[in-house]
Length: 448
Image (tube, rainbow, N blue to C red; front, side, top):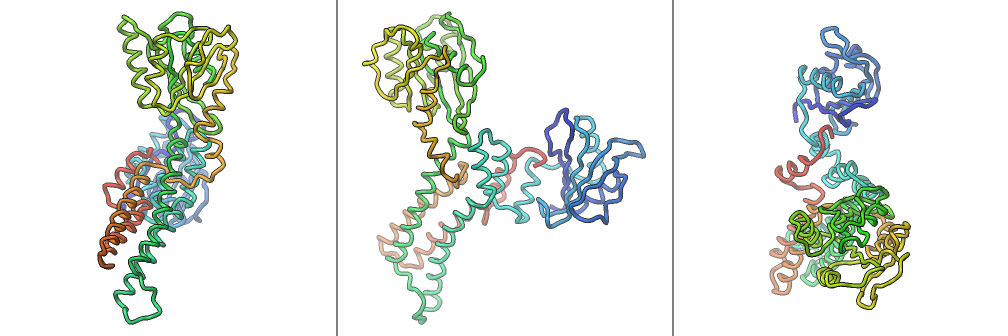
């Protein structure tokens, strides 16, 4: 990290302002070569007006923010140039900075430096990217909690409890003659570790909500042709995205859209009507519809209130019987010919045509316990890496309990306890390997 990096931190395209960020020990010297004001001896956290020039030719009118280490995002000297928006001007200034000694930053390299320099931990680093990518209010709150240190504190508390066990074991081994030191017997270790195990299980269970909050709920609208699936999609997302006609087979491929219900994102897929067909294109659409059932979080199975239940309807009921499912009876504004006795489970009645879809939204809120999720402070682990690492600690706890049952010596049990402590450290980045860090930060955007 001896070199100075530069990247564009704002979205590329036409806009009022673009931001170019630099970090490293030569930041001030590099900018000073092309900026009309001398910034080498100015106070930290100040903004300076001037122009960017190349060989006395005016490039742009800019504001330059000067931030001196260590009170910066990366704990290195940082410069931010606010120039006029637009790809040509922004890239020209970027080119000049590279020409004068900076290196183009890799994706996420500014945040990576913040982590390696101890400015943030690994959970906070991942939360930054989640905050940038958040698509709902709940996802934003989840990321903010990770960034605020609340999630880190939760893991640190577990590590501290493990540390106390380890320190007492070490004291027993090194100073057996001291009578005022707590003796860590196997029974006492088991008692303490059961409490920690319960806390970890609670965190894992509650963190299942983080998938819902972060990625949204994949929702498939399923049914025979012309039961009102496309109309329902359009009403849910509030736009005419799916083509609606009375011609069977209009939807040949799935159409997708998103909606936020009570600050939780729903990814909705309107599928091709499932029926027997000799049309090859429609057959592909039907096959895709069936495949989507397996990957969805919930199936909305739509029936036409004005039609009798037929063979295809029964097939769909059987096909989705093991899935989380809501049965929607659509077109309740028409005469009822549907035998509702053949339906069971979560059933709602709506009229997509008349925009009467609130019962469906209410059922989705109830099914995923969204009210409860929104009322809780989202102190969850929020990605697969964090959750899978915490699950590994449970495996080590199981091994530790087996060792206690098999009457292994305390100094042997200490090995498993130490491994639990290390795994908890991996979650927050207290101990890590380079490969893990590279994998995490390569998914960040440029300039962050």
